[in-house]
Image (cartoon, rainbow, N blue to C red):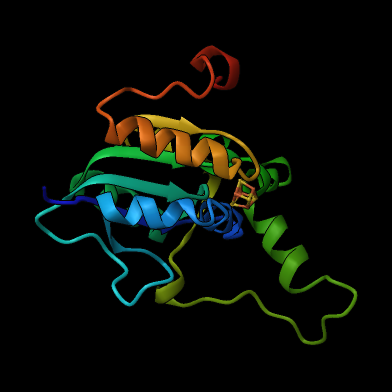
Length: 181
Ligand code: SF4
């Protein structure tokens, strides 16, 4: 039986959701018998193959144009797209900058911090352009499943993947419990 292909990536987040994924510990050995990780931020290959994968997992919120491009590529190449964690699901901590505005947040972070001398706001094409508002992933692309939590527990992540591999639609929480507009 061919293995189910999974790709992961992260946007504006802290990598904690991916660390929680690794916390499934020895269950990952069992998982690896059934799945192949084609790409992730911590492997050599960073993007899903052009021919696509079955499951895509995205951590982090959308805060700049680079995040938008990555989210769209994942959507195009993944049959099932999962938003992993509160940043991906709600915006969470990255979205706190929405309270003061992007330029104020950048100024405070890069110029006004007490320890900064001759600070400047970085500006490079590689960084992407900051958006006026940080948003959850589903504001930019269709998301099929949400795994909330900061980070989600390893058990929740393993449950969702196990259910998908069994051909079931996993239920983590009733959607009305954790989604809002
Ligand atoms: S949901 Fe929490 S653990 Fe995951 S990327 Fe965001 S801040 Fe980090």
